[in-house]
Length: 337
Image (tube, rainbow, N blue to C red; front, top):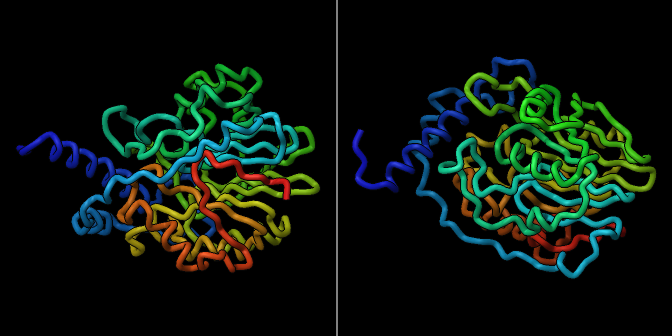
C-alpha cells in the first residue's frame, strides 16, 4: 500500500489501532462480563462500518484550563481538582486519592502514535502533593498508564494502588508495589474511609489476547458523613440503581460525559450527556462533575459537544435536581458543602 503523505500513513495506522481495540470492545469471549452481558456487543462488520462511515476527525480544540489550584493549599481537606480526562486529585479525611492517572502525551501503548492530548495535565505530576491511594477503574490506556503510576510511587513510598481483579500481575510485573485487587462490591478501609469497587457497563483489554481478562468498574469513597463516587468508563445500566440501593444517595459524583458518538456503536460502553444525567438521578447525586471529555479525541463527536449538550439539557442555570457541572481542568472544587 502506498501513501501520499506521512499524514495519510499516520491516519491509516491510527485507524488500524482503533479498529483492533474496537473489535475487542464488541466481542466477548473472556473471564469477566457485565451485569447484562448482552448489552453493547458488536460484530466485526459493525466495527468496519463505523470506521468506514466515520466523519472527518474532530477539530483539535483546547478547552480552557484554570490555574486556581496554584493559589490553594493541598494540605486542606475536602477538595477535588480535575487534572484531565478521568484523572482527579481528591482529598477527603486527610487521605489524598488520585483516580486513573494518565500524564503522558498519548493514551496509547506507543509513544509515537495513538490519541494525543489536547491539553496538558492541569496539575503537573511534579506539583502533586503526597498521594496515599491510586484508584484504577479499568486497564484501557486512557485510564491505566504504567509509567505515570511508577513515577508517582517513586515519590510516594507508602502509596497503595487499587486495581480491578485481573490487573495486579500487570502492575507487579512492572515493579509497582502495594497493589490490591478488587472484584465488584469488594472493599478496603483506610483510616476509617471505605473504598468500594462498584459495577460499570464496559470492557477491558490492552492487547489482542487479554479481552475481558480483568474487571472494570467505578469507585465509591465513603465515610459516615460523605460519599464520593468515580464512575470510571461506562454505558448506562441498572448497576447505578443497585449502587444507590446499597449505599444510599451519593453526595459527590464524577461522571463520564464524552466519547459517545456514534450512538449505535458506543452506547453499550460510553454514556452520552443524557444518560449521564440519568445516572446522576439514579444515584440521587447532590452534585456531579463531568469527566472523560476535552482531553483526548477518542470518538466522532466534536471536542466541545459534551458540554454543549449538557448546557442544552440542563439549562444555563443548571435547574435539574441532580446537576452535572463541567469544571475547568485545574479548578478547585470544594467538596465540604
